[in-house]
Amino acid sequence: MNNYKVKRFSLIELLVAISIIAVLVTVTVGGASALVGRAKRLASQAKAVGIKMAIENFANDNRNMLPISESSSPRKDTIISNGVFDGFSTASLATFTKISDVSAYENFIKKLMGEISGTGLSGTSAPLVTVLNKREKAYLKFEGATNSASMNFLEQFQDSFGKYMVIILDTNYDGKIEYEKGGKKYTIRAKTLVFSGGSDGYNAAPSPECGGFSSNVPKSW
Image 1 (cartoon, rainbow, N blue to C red):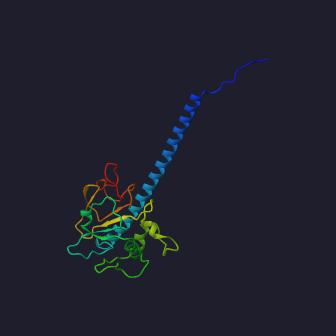
Image 2 (cartoon, rainbow, N blue to C red):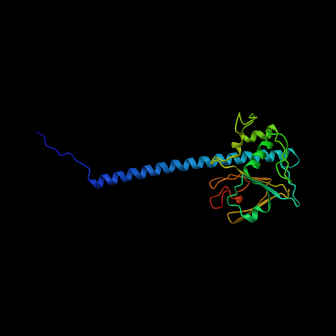
Image 3 (spheres, rainbow, N blue to C red):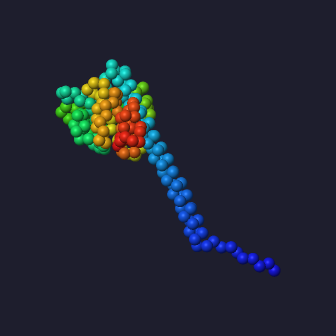
């Protein structure tokens, strides 16, 4: 008859094994979470670029005019948001004509898309909005959606985190957009800047100096 002992793990060995498994699970879950976050940021960036391209193609088709007017004197650049301007300084915001609540923002989008009649936004000195043509709308990836029943086109102006994009337009036509964000001042040679609405997003500006494509500068939202 053979006598042999069954080798068992000691308590310390079991604790070490459990710790290793816990570390592996944490690394795996953390890596997956980082990938999801990156995917959301890239999707937000793609939407921002689409909005920028649609508006700037309108300008190219209309003698450099943007699809929204500016009636203040002297003229200012226009910033469009649902009321959230994360990171923008108060002094910087004072230099813009602001469309800054959800209702006005959504009316701007609807008029831009030709979803509702008329061109003026609410208010005594309200800017006028011109409808994009079919080719310009194609950059927004919802061509063929003629009403909210066929597609909620308002979502095309929201980032992957559910926040409306912040859009800045060079409506004083001086060839640049100036703003202060995160304690830094930026001067960007562009007709349009499009920012996502939260702290994890990117913007669709022409260069990283605007604070969108580099980790060492404040990002849009």
